[in-house]
Amino acid sequence: MSKPVPSVPAPQVSAHRTAVALLQAMRPRQWTKNLFLFVGMVFTDNWHLLPRALSAFVLFCALSSGMYLLNDVRDRERDRVHPTKRNRPVASGALAVGAATAFGIVLIAGGLAGALLLGRRFAATALLFVALQVAYTYGLKNAVILDVFAIAMAFVLRAIAGAAAVGVPDSVWLLVCTLQLALFLGFGKRRHELVELEQEAGSHRDTLDHYSVPFLDQMISIVLGALVVSYAVYSVSSPTAASHPGMVFTLPFVLYGIFRYLYLIHIRRMGGSPEAVLLSDRPLQMALLLWLLCVVAAFKLR
Image 1 (cartoon, rainbow, N blue to C red):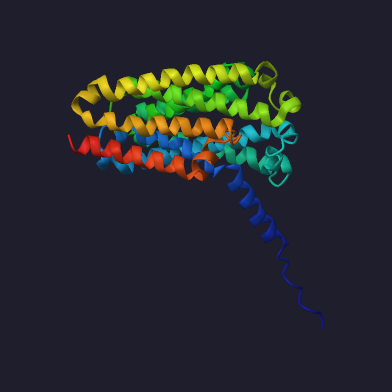
Image 2: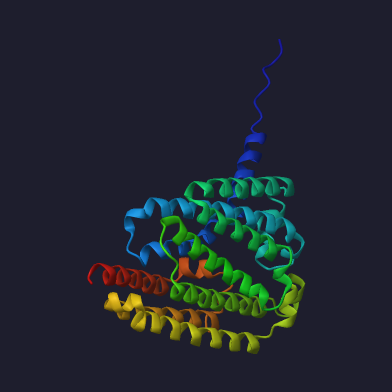
């Protein structure tokens, strides 16, 4: 009498590990970057449009994750020499190149298709966002200074897309402040990479051979000076400030947030992952929360 053949759980384990690796490769922590899509809604006090803003957020998370997967496939050899990026699923071999590529394409295609449901303006901005990410992955990331500008413009496109999703006009002041803030974060990220990798920096990213810590510190100082002035003018003298005078009280929280992030870059040697800093630093989180509450109050109590 033959014995029954026991079930083999290996495929389920493999499928489970692949699913976990895929989720990690999608980088959900970096979805915090897509919070910029809510800027247009917050600064126009259109909270009734929150469902549309949330839909836009989900679609951009899909687009971002799709590009992260394709980027990890392209950079897997370089990532293997990086002290932390070597643990990424594609670089470590936990996620097959074919699976990462296929799912990345599906996420991007699905995100662009879904973007059409939120209007042509939003869909066009989403398409520009993907085009910029492709240009960055396959070229701009190796161009000195332009690499950081490409990262910054992605944040600007997020803000534009958020405004398009809820049907409000773009604010030039907020777009300028978004660009300057993103440049600050981008140059801070490059500085952290340069300090962390030292002599091996160039083997991970070509542009790091052309940067230096003093140069990046100078860029950060220039961008921060412009950011402080721009936001100060916006919160005091812009048309928005004229109709919502309480905006001036948001300025101290912005200044503290900037100073706190500078402290984390220079003293704590953080900044390589802005989203990780935001998710781990309580003082920065409190400053952001108080700033948001102050903005809401300024628009409600006019």
